[in-house]
Image 1: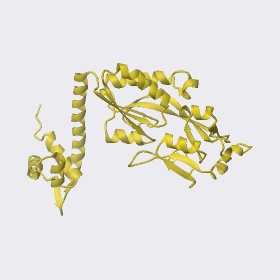
Image 2 (image 1 turned 180 degrees about the horizontal axis):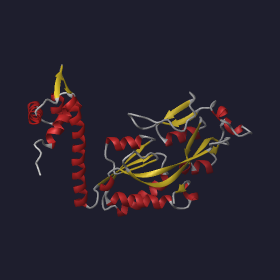
Image 3 (image 1 turned 180 degrees about the vertical axis):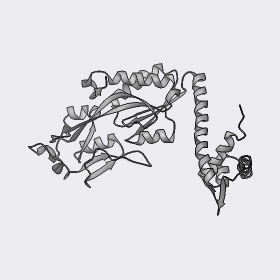
Image 4 (image 1 turned 90 degrees about the vertical axis):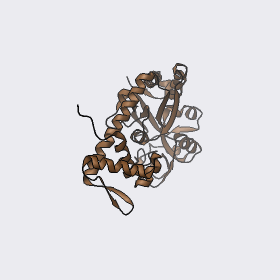
Length: 306
């Protein structure tokens, strides 16, 4: 088999020059000298027999051939990194660290019980837990390599297991004016009141879901913030039933009587960010999550997926 003349490092340097906007910026990012970066790109172009970059002002710009090869090289670098991570996983046996991204709508009681059961079996695996809302989990997969994402949105190309059906219910503080309505509330009446909406945590693209499309809304960054605001008597919201047990039982919150849509539900999935490279600690945590989500619905405020 013919050995490649161009190295992965040469492609990595080219990517950095393009992504950072120039040779000096790439040199700083790669912790190399500018002359080393320039020589690496020049050698790459010499080996290929045609230019990949042209200089416009102070910025390096790809040629048409360069654009094609850069796209392919990104896949090549990713495959190489994935291969090294797979080799590490196979050699290590048990992940030293587990990055977990959880949509805030995931039932908190089930998550906490699963983590509590996981800890004594974790063999020292450190858990890095990050919260997301709506498409935030998808962005985390696109930008990084989390081991596990718990989300209602499964991006193309990822393995996922259904784990639970989350129930959302429309609620307002017990003294809210909406509770004084004698007839079931329609959307037109509902739209005249302030709605509390949880912001999509994705920074590059966001999804609007669960709000009525009116200007009478406040946007917050977390389920907890929305819960506290609604409990105080300001506005109404659709919130995860599993997180409302105390507020409903104590009478601080009451379910709204709507013509339709007072309850909504959607499936949550365990998305394996590393696919076939998923390690045993991650798989154990998913098993524990599934077990906790399949206990009596009256205890969890959610519907198990069976």
